[in-house]
Length: 407
Image (tube, rainbow, N blue to C red; front, side, top):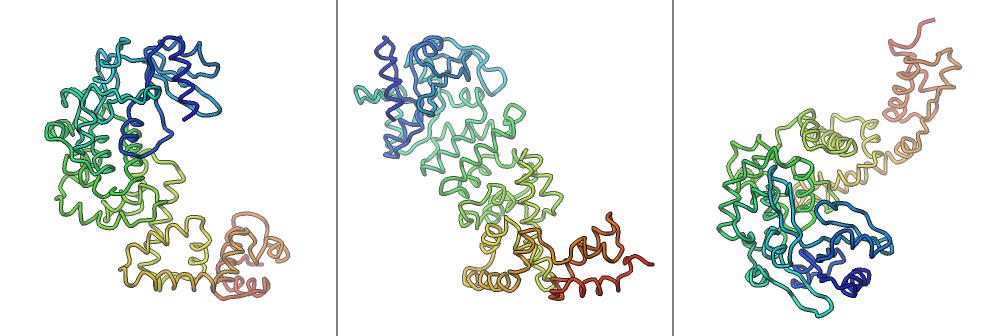
């Protein structure tokens, strides 16, 4: 806050108007303190760059300069008027303007206010304060125009409605439904995923996803949902608000596709442009579901590797949510006990310290190569499943196998 005030004072002392803008003002009026402060000013971007020693021109063509003070970043934007939108994403041309005109180019009334920290005054040209008191999400000006300008605003409306438990005003609602199928190709899937991720950070993610479906947005993002009813979608999402808060967003999205096999889940991850780590998580979660459903068919070697995986603790907590509430404690206790029984094997796996090593096999004239790798892998499996602690006894078991090298 002090750094942001310093920016305001510096701009003011040089003869420029400057205010806190947008989301910070909304959250301030809702009594939700925030350090995420954007600043709007009539200072041209070149002036902002000249007044502060550490700046980054992240969007200079749109009048946006990042000012860095004590390792904190503040976006300073020149009041502007957006002239023309061609791609459903951003203006192709802008003109610098006044605070009033700038406020009217923004998305929703509750995001269109300014705050002067020097006079402690709210500057509201769009009746944002009134809509905030009425708990309403309303587009500034013509809703159809706002959504044609930036189609991602449709998803933002739903996100804010779910986050604050506000009603979306009827004209705004009607415009979302009208333009829902126009989401692509203007908006990249990465931007949509960012919005879904932000949604998931607040209570009511399930409500937000259901609302997206009601407005025809969710089935536009995921066409495989088009033939589902609202009740079916609601049923599939019934448990997601109970998932651990640290769960990746993809865990909730996968609940919409209970019939998906592993390859389909991985394809979904690729469609959403998720990281390799998230794909690995989805793969491990899928295998965990299989293990739980077929637990009597899974050997101790597989369980030990399952418990040793760095994703295990989160995945077992996610899987527990799928168990009836009255049986959840017993489910977790059962796996805690099984884990303790296998702990020494789990530690070996984590430390990459198998009982049977290549040196043992070399003494049996097994040469390094693919076969040695297979024998080491099988030897580890035997040691865990048969509870053997002597490498020589493991080798005796290996010698009974067909692929043990003949003399």
